[in-house]
Length: 307
Image (tube, rainbow, N blue to C red; front, side, top):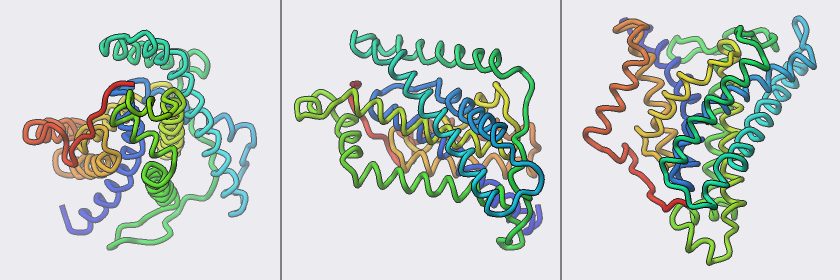
């Protein structure tokens, strides 16, 4: 691999890793407050992509829209994906998880319910939207706008990376600087004591799911903008993002960010070295190595009680 190829693949890895990081945050947020691995989060990601597709089909960008219109179409697509993702995540918490929590169900039941909800949404999307992959309508003329050490960065890649960074920084500020963030941290640390101190646990958990759903939905739009929209699109990115959350430290938001970037770089660098067929394998190898030598993840783990 030449030096120029190294920079090309590194840029691609950081761009892909930023997407994994945003998806991983959804896993780690829910785990932080409920000690639950929400395996249906991959379907939240997928339905967010369908939300952006529906919005773009309604507004119909047409051919060669102006720069101002392109910005508007992108904003509308993001809004649609965020809405679909947030509503889906809220519905999951309200219908699937809250009744179990109020009945004091065992952790295994939560896990089985998450897997069942994932299969339900997966098949529902296939039934409603069809089984064939669909491209997003073209919103802008995609071309390189600058280079990093000779590696070209096009509009789609810049949009993907910039959106992911803004969402990650925004979430970090929300969690560490706002009243809602204090509630999330309090419930994650000790839900029972937080309830005694006046924290509305149900409201905090619902809003946590909504935030994770919004992030996952927008990530679905960004991923579909690189590929296509499909009812199966959530599985591989969802599993990889879950691995990234564990690598960074499940329950740790900054750990999820770090893990996502790391997994994205490792996957992308594997392609020129070993071939594309080893790409997903490399992510699992990183996960296994981290679990062998640091089971709590690279940036540790925040342990809390189930709400």
